[in-house]
Picture 1 (tube, rainbow, N blue to C red):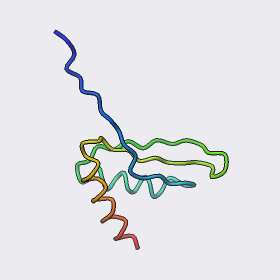
Picture 2: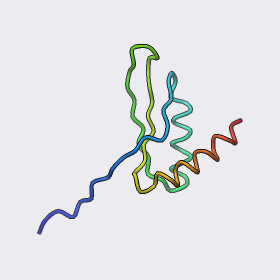
Picture 3: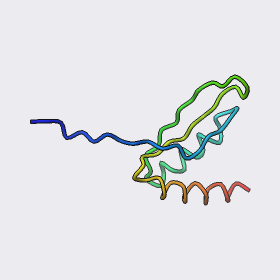
Length: 75
């Protein structure tokens, strides 16, 4: 039969350094708006922890617009 699996191309739309609070809030907001999100964490030599928010390429533009609006409400 063959696999009909589709590979998802993930793109980074946000990076946070230090504590994961902002990245987690952005993730929750985008998920509430119907955007698929994955949050990756890693370590850097200088900044400690880095949190990377990624979305599927097909939802990149919509996610960026939503994230921009969300960040404006935080100011």
